[in-house]
Image (cartoon, rainbow, N blue to C red; front, side):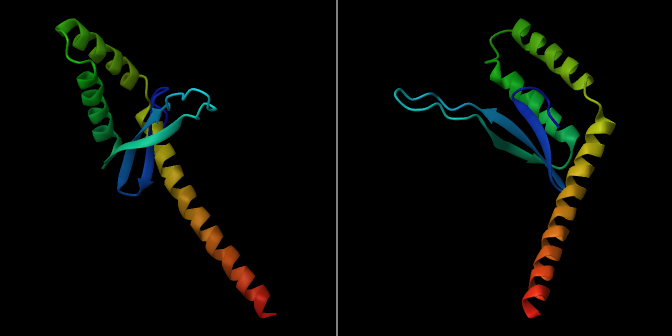
Length: 120
């Protein structure tokens, strides 16, 4: 579930979700620019804990330079979180989990078919 351009939440397994942060490598002179990538920032038992952690991370990231900065950031995050559809997000995480399970089953079945064909 994409939160914004810099963060997304992914289901790891039936017990964990993680926050992924988009990282953009610094350009090195004379070299081809590197592609952005997603880095795991933390593991959480559910979306609620992940979002609370994200709020804390973003507020701490303001440098806590003043009450106005913090309140602006809190308003921004509340609007962002309010715009998310939790039910849809939970369904998506369940579908991701089920998809991973089905992919594993498909891989196992493919290996069995290859083994059976080799026995012929």
